[in-house]
Image (tube, rainbow, N blue to C red):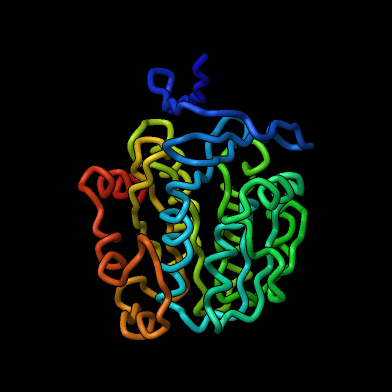
Length: 283
């Protein structure tokens, strides 16, 4: 008997992956959590039926959400990560020697524990001495701070369920307040390809633009994400992701990557015309 995991991307489109076995299935206070083994993509996590990291392609997402802002502000010391229960963002951040503190806000304790047990290559850095973990609502957490963080990374799930509050105008306003004057906000920005995802992306971009003077969008190709075409948002009070980017400084760190490089950094902000049109519609 063949077992297949299917994720619905639209009412007319599904992504199906043949799985060898299911490793874990459970229900937390917030969502259903599943872990599967597959030959093509290795082990992967699904939350409420939506696939998140796979062992095969998670490096693309995690490098692009971390290395792009860190290449613009490599001296970032105080960092807030909201979400990131799978640990991939933390794994990438701890490679930077300049980072002094990483506050991780993950509302679902069980997600983190499951990833530590079943996805150890991704969730391998929660024990770093610079990491502090808070199991609470990111929307409530961020309200406490003003002029505090150099970088905020929002590694959220889709804009419903436990992550819904992380897509609101209030949330982005509080992020603006919590950042220092040269701080950076980076978030997963959904896909521009399917209509519902594109509309969510436009709403998000509209909210961010209402606070930040510098708002840019960049892209990556991630095979298991809806349409394979994924966007990230870059926002700052003063830093521009290309003009203020210094390739020599980042390359001097000697970090080994599998996807990100400094040539790609610049190119990632060159968007297809249809994406530019979508962004122009909300600008």
